[in-house]
Image 1: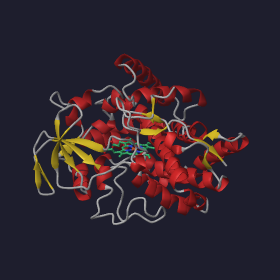
Image 2 (image 1 turned 120 degrees about the vertical axis):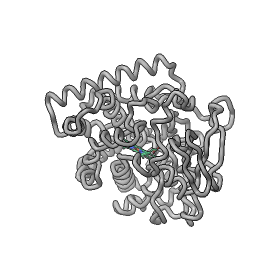
Image 3 (image 1 turned 30 degrees about the vertical axis):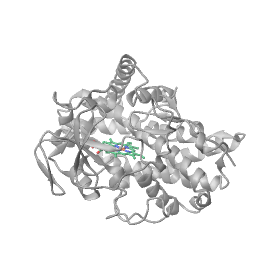
Length: 401
Ligand code: HEM
């Protein structure tokens, strides 16, 4: 069951725009704004300022969960668990991050290329055997990242539908009651705890086993944090990639049909396009990386006071004309002028960035090579959306070839 299905903004008849069409204001100096819960915050939007906020130890995540933190941190779901690595700062954060760092280096991820390619090919064989029109979300963009993360974590096929159930509650769009989210997350945590116990007992060649070994070397990591780490990886490791792949196909097939066959030419071309798509298309409507200042910090000539909540808008910063002279959707294959902020920056820089990029590159390349005449089977303007806490992607995307 999808988390939610919608074509319009909640409480309005205005249709939801595809994410590649969202409007971004020009970035400017840090300024105060009001969050959706009515509390005050600072908006930081220039490229250098966003990098500064995300990299400066004066801004962190843990303080968001202090008793006087903003109400937005009270929402249900895994994203707001103070045990999550993403919600730790300083030495606690580093200790958790070290248990995973080695597994996610570019070189380590490059070794996964052959088996990721074989999962892609297997799904494409099944797609080819089907009778068009076929829903590319159900048959490709959803099962691919689920299969990849399951294989990495050493999970068997039988847990896949439960993984989606847990993910949809972990990243709820608000359509589940607090009790439903709590029940699903308790089940998910029990699953994570069992998985850790099993791999301690019988280690294998998988990510959970390497976390167990690294955590024992580190020592002193609370079990609840390890459980959140494993659960966070399972959901974070596929939901965002599925979202990006679905939105990329919506854009490519709907608006760049002339470029589609070029993606099948070679992997490098598809890799360049993957970088541009990651830069252009946000994961959802919720744009900011949120932090809280523990001390007063000068950002771009403005003093942000201690205790302030700060929204670092990576989408606006990715369009900062001081840094990116081309329009983001200009040339799909042109290299970016500067590193994109789509995976964040600083100590919380996305750990799965290399994996996500590789999945997108292989998926787009092999799909375009196999189906150079792939096209939407229904008007893309009628798309309905799968909504999550921070993400949005097509619920279904029927295609033909
Ligand atoms: C298209 C796909 C993806 C995008 C756009 C994305 C984006 C991001 C961003 C922006 C952040 C930092 C947020 C912030 O600082 O406020 C982040 C953090 C993170 N991502 Fe990703 N991500 C993707 C895929 C993945 C995958 C595949 C994995 C794991 C297998 C992953 C694991 C993580 C983890 C563990 C963190 C937290 C790191 C920390 O707190 O130190 N992500 N991601």
